[in-house]
Image (cartoon, rainbow, N blue to C red):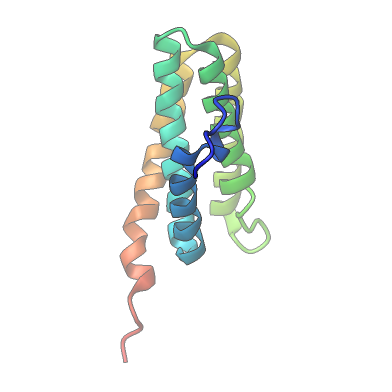
Length: 144
């Protein structure tokens, strides 16, 4: 009745990952813009932790994949949604911070540098935490 999944199939086509992918797609489709940015931060920090663990275990390929995903989240996610025309100095500073973080993660990938990963985490944790703090004020209805 059910075909066996090939162990050589891409991860996203394996039955065990289909449910996770569908759950994530549903969450993304239903998420507010604020929640989407929070999800990007969650993915970024998850990949940083995976990369650090992979370096500790000598898994260079897994480290490279995790760091490449983290850089893509910075470049294609967090940096790309900044409005540099209307965002003022804050948007410009975040753009520079995300660019610097991407460079440090590229360095970490080339040199297996755990300290560079920790530096990026230390730089971006306050941004992630501040973003989390503004959620309740953004989603509250205006007072009458």
